[in-house]
Amino acid sequence: MKKLIFPGLAVLLLLEFSCVPKPKKPEGEMVEFQAYTTRFISYQTSAQVEGAVDEVERYLLDPRSIIATTAAAKVTPLSSQKFEKLGDQAEYRIELLGTQQTVIATLIYHRAGEEIWYFIKQKDQVAGMSIFRLKLKEFQGETKVSLSWALQISGVVNLFPQLAEMVDLPEIMADVIEMGVALGQVNFNPALKVEEILAGGRRGEFKDIFFQGTTYRVWINAPMEKVAEYLHNPETWETWKEKYYDFGRCLGQKWTEPCPLNFDLLGIVKMDASSFTITYRYPDISSVCWVFNDLNFISLVQIILKPDQGGTEMVLTMTVEPPPITNSPETMNFLMNAGKIGDTIKQMLLEIKTSVEGTG
Image (cartoon, rainbow, N blue to C red; front, side):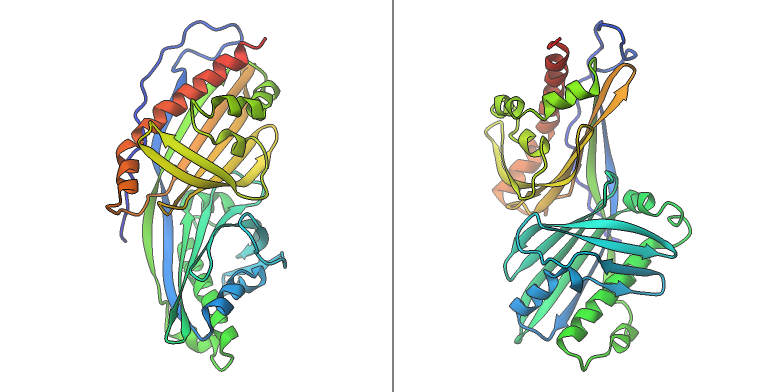
């Protein structure tokens, strides 16, 4: 399997605790930081479909088209409303060897006639994610569809904990994809037979992709409700957007459409992105998916608040996809300066702590 490693985002300076009012967190770092890699398995395949690009695109934007039944698994759409704009969502039921879960697919990227991305996550849960990408290209009057489904391994374990060690889930995933692709081909040419298409074996290949994960933890001497009120106050992020990044408003409320982001890292790296609400449960959970359109990669960002020793533990996690390696100035600037992002996030968390604790 091919492996892609994304450089670490930051190495943070360590600070020692000063005295804080009781109740207090045991002595340690003000902001705890951990960097790690998160393994995704990607299955990539392609197929020729006997339909025009616009017809195939309409088919792929209809949740009812994403169906598959194999010996081990079944995917059933629970939504009938077509994906029409970015941020639209649809629910699916996944049955696997007698167990079942509900997942939500969010349309996070769409370039008409060329490319579609779906972000898929278990309903009402914060762990685990997958990215489903489709590329369309006209070829000899038909449409070539290239498909990639990247699945977070730890997320699969959370989704089906009873089965994760009993069966080869990536193999099952590949079979589901091949079945779905074959059904799509037959939809546009009923003379084809699903069984005959699948008899030729799998047409794709597996690839390991390693996302970069970073987790920041800070303890705040205040109840969770007070911390949440501060974080979800639009005035907080309006005040900070010049000093830090203008992303707080996208985390601080539930958006049913893309929330625009503008990053300016030290005047060197400037990027535009779109933020999509994935999970929003006030007061304790807010997670979003950032799509960096120019650099063609995504990042999952989430904030979780937990009552802890009379105060609140705030956990900020970022899971960043490795951007395509190109020689473009935008990519090179991002890779060279990404390490500075961690220091800024640390400063932001310390200011949240100081501001909330100082408001009485």
